[in-house]
Amino acid sequence: MKIRKATEKDVTGIAYVHINSWQSTYKGILPNQYLASLNLETRKKNWLRNLKMLHNATYVAENGDKQIIGFVAGGPEQTNDPHIQGEVYAIYLLKEYQRQGIGRKMIKTVVDELIDKEHKNLIIWALKDNPSCGFYKALGGHIIAEKTVKMAGIELIEVGYGWDDIHEILLHL
Image (cartoon, rainbow, N blue to C red):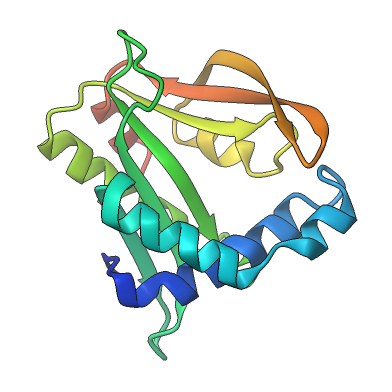
């Protein structure tokens, strides 16, 4: 397994992981019809745009066959909250590769870059019913914020796991 900086050539693999992870993680949370409608071409376009403009710290995890099995993206906090500097925007890993320590390695890679860019603290947003929320708790995150979001025509609760000192997350890796 290898973690490396994402390039524009990775958009198909990132889009595939993104869709597959949503379909396995959010089953029972988001409507099945919505999950089934997720489109690879649309996600590829979104990720191409993201890699060019938004996500200045995006990494992919590859298996031994150089297939993308996960990705993580982070950068400056996106809502201009005056108290929070860094944010992990997304972390997704194919289900069959979860619980092997790869997620922790991906988080470390993006957090190291955020530290290099002098972000002092960190937030990661997740749907409250996301079964992966335990991962953020295990990394020492505490719920510091909550908001209602609309996805697939329904309202859901999103929680923000925070670290007052970005270095704290490294202690749990």
